[in-house]
Length: 161
Picture (cartoon, rainbow, N blue to C red):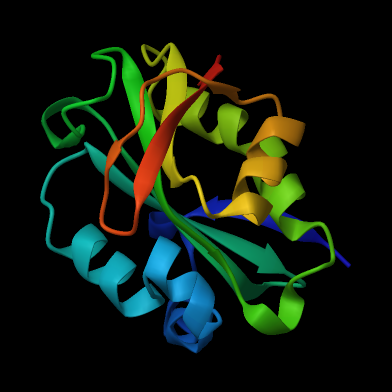
């Protein structure tokens, strides 16, 4: 089965129509939000500083994430970074290594559209142990002091490009 990480703009109309079918478990939603919120953020931010990427398996959307840079960076991010937000894999496709695959493919997608970006950053809730294991295994390193986030204290993590 073919796995791809595709920019939102390159999706077919049928693939875009399939994005709302991505569902995460309620416990995960507290950390990553839902697809409706991610699409709202993407489609209501004009310009080139917010990008959406869809994770396709056999041409069918199974995951989604947002990238931000420039004026849309959160205050904790480096000026030469792109930040990762709302990473979600459909609950029915979890446990198949798709999150790892997505993180491995992500640097190349970022370099394609934003070659000036020097690192990727994210914030993650310290109670989200599954996400912390995933990011650390993909080479992300803890890079910041904890701060009060939406759900508990969060840590900043960075992946140099």
